[in-house]
Amino acid sequence: MGQYILVLDQGISGSRAILVDSKGKIITSVECPLKPVFPKPGLVEYKPGDILKSQLNAIKTLFRKIGSKKKQISAIGITNQPSTIILWDKSTGKPVYNAIAYQDTRGADLCRERSVQRDMV
Image 1 (cartoon, one colour):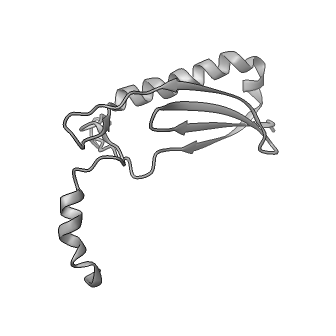
Image 2: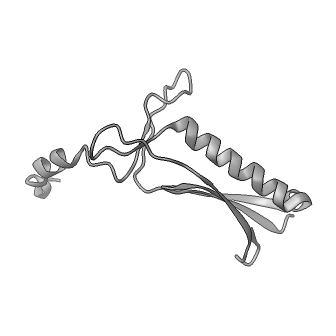
């Protein structure tokens, strides 16, 4: 069994690939930048293809950095931004629209309207 864990972390500013040992110590890490899209004030999105490219680039860069240690990876852990969503087309597997980030405020008015009904939920 391998002695390392590959951790993939998708944050708001980039994708990170982290190599951790069996005791949780970070051996090394790589971060690749990711730029948000701001279609209108208050809207924060990410292009799904950019997320994938950034994450794959982080993994490839880490693998080059660690060399033969990649053969000793026994598990993968994945973290991501809270409440960021992407809708996928079931038949094609392609994203329907950009990822809507948790910082996006397009639903704020609806939330305020519904907050008066919170006792009913």
